[in-house]
Image (cartoon, rainbow, N blue to C red):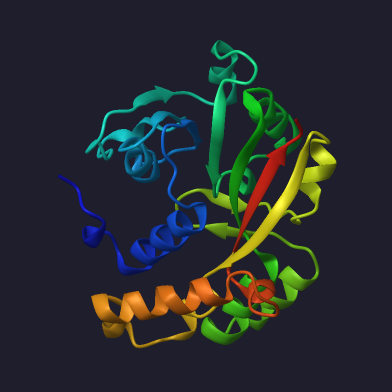
Length: 233
């Protein structure tokens, strides 16, 4: 059985915060779009009916399968098999910034979402990335470039095509941003790597992160934003 404690420290805390922000989901039909290794799909499959969609076969070689869920290998076209209003909840974490045509993908996600259901989107926050470059990585050129509107990159997935929180409502007028939460406002500012793996330290950091996740100015400079988008009834 795969366990959260075996993940890298940063990922363990990241999942912990996101899942707590989503709350205790039960008896829901859930789509995890861009599911990666299936960590989140597996977590919610314990109490829900979950479908996971992931385009990269490579990501599935070591997929988490502690609980039963349906895994589909494919991209947004794979959703054509589902009727309108199929899912109560859609999870789309760190996916849209790696896609050029975000509007088309978001339109298809809202099509298969039930009226009154919600989409959970986790995205890179440009202000947090500027903070990372300037304070942690001492890379002023990249920090200035980001301020000028340039993209950056991730080692595994390529170019990070930033977008603003408000743009999701422009791409799909049936969705409304109900809540915006911050993730990792403080984590990366603590440079003592040995502390990161300590469970007691992780618990205290998670508590602090949750306390400020819906407070300004902390969420404005968090490294990631978590958007909850509700579909109109």
